[in-house]
Length: 151
Image (cartoon, rainbow, N blue to C red; front, side):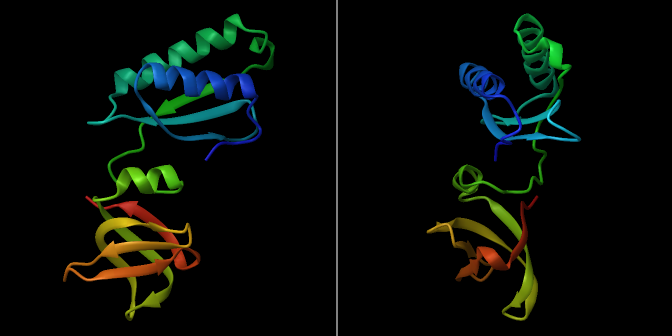
C-alpha cells in the first residue's frame, strides 16, 4: 500500500492525522518521483471533497513548518471513488459483504469477469466471491487482473 520513497515522518503524519479524523488511509503513493505524494482517504459513509481539501491543507501546513519544507513536496488528497479498485488486505477486509467485479487473466467457469459479493480473502492467495446464483467461488489472486467495487 505505502511507498517506501516517502519519508517516515510524512508517513507517520498521514497515518496519525487520518486516525485523529477517523479516516481510513486507502493508499499512499508517489507519482513522478518522491516529491509528489498522493493520499487516498475514505471513512464510514464516504469522505467529502471538503474533508479531502482540509486534510490536504493540514498536511501542507505541517510540511511547511517542518524541516522537510525544503524538498518541495506536492500533496494530492482524494477519495477512492465509488468503483474503487481493491489492492491491499485492509481493503479486502473493508469490502467484505460488498459487490465486486473481478477481471481475470484466465477464464474461470468460461468467463473472464465475475460479479458477486466479496466473502473474503483466504490465506492471501484466494478471493472468495458469492456469485449471482449463491455459489461461493474461489479465485486465485494470481489470476486476478483487477478487482473493483461494483456499483
